[in-house]
Amino acid sequence: MSESLFKQLKDIGIDEELAAKVSASLDPDHNASKKDVLIMQEAILQHQAFFSQKMDAMNAKFDAEFKAMKAESDARKAESDARYYEVKMENSRAYAELKTEIHTVINRQYLVTFGSVLLTIVSVTAVNWYFHV
Image (cartoon, rainbow, N blue to C red; front, side):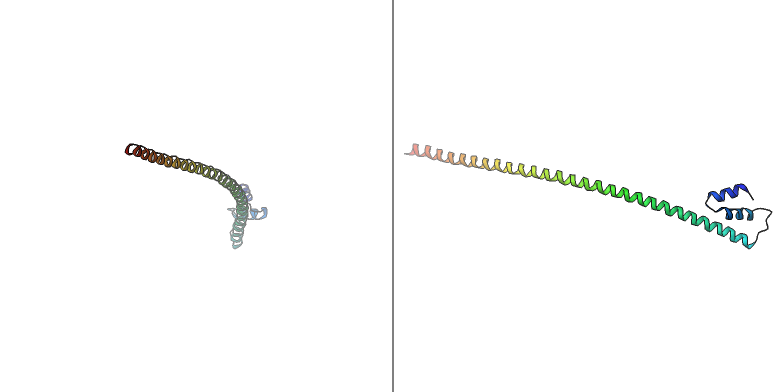
């Protein structure tokens, strides 16, 4: 039995008994039979099952890590959204106050302008009346 083949089969996850059979089947002095083909087939299936289990474990690990990262990302997004709406509300209040102040100033300016126009009309009328009488 080749020691390196036996070791390699053990390293890829094939059990010791089957690894010994496969190694013996591949010995150049051994006469091949149908049983040897079945032994090789069993080794292949064992390796596929071992690999499949390993992949399932890795997928489960990655899924758990992904879910944790997604939950963390969602929490950060929610926090960011809350801060955004808070800032937006503060800006909206400041904008409303500014708008009110501007309207007050504009309204006051209209009153001053209207008063100036009335005063001009009264003064022109008074001067006109004084010189025509």
